[in-house]
Image: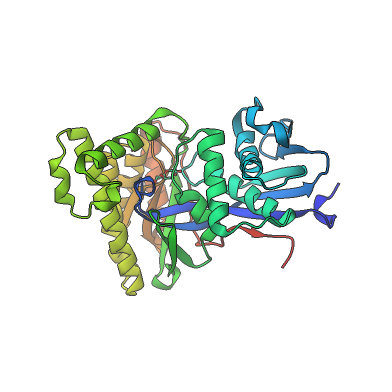
Length: 373
Ligand code: GLA
């Protein structure tokens, strides 16, 4: 059956994202600068009237899940299906009437690459349900619904960066997010005009945020904020203040967050002033050093990819996302792409790492309906 052809249903898409700068700042109330990728998750949705939700995925053929909307809280569902079902549950829990729905997902966002395939699933389902059942929710609600689905239903204690990016990003722009207030601003991001590219290199070492290290970093940041007498580390603006922390681990974690917030502001200022985007390169590299040495979320593969990119002439490079695997970005001259990719591939082969996958990031649209204009 061609679901798209039926007037009652529709197709929605939500993108993955790459974060230009501002890593592990969101849950500290700080700043981030993501952009949406052209890679999306498409959600084909059709209403039902029998109170059931059925979800399938092209990436998991033969694993269709069927649950009563009213029974979602206790449903013993595992794995990928918890992401879409968490969104249905979150609408239901907030009192929105979901009479039943069929959801079919098809994604092109690399999974486990630190490019927010999870948020793309959640946000595609969130806007599909909003439009299909004419639910009155704002964009801020959508972001919150998708985020709570991940935090509470999936059990990954992530911040709001990924869902905000997937909903609010615009083509040709980066999104300046103040995660403390939820406020955002579009920042024109036109690398092509400066003959530059933002290269993404997926190290092909999947990360998993449900495991303990991400949650541990969050707890460490909360402990550091408490000892410094602030509600959130975002409230510390002078990096020298972290010297007051007695525990050397907490000192490092706080130093990363405070310095990273300053780096986001510096990059936003450079872009808004229309400075040569090459000038943000060293700031990206400084972010990597901080994530590697102070926040300690990098891996041998991520470090190797960053070093290789820089040695091959990148203006700046850093790991992206939560860490412990996933991708790096490198700001490169557009003409240098092959040279940079070859250098990374060569070093990965020499180190017996899995083959990396490289592609150029194009700042793309946020979540939208695709079968209507
Ligand atoms: C993951 C989380 C985000 C954010 C990043 C690190 O992508 O989902 O909320 O914390 O890690 O910046």
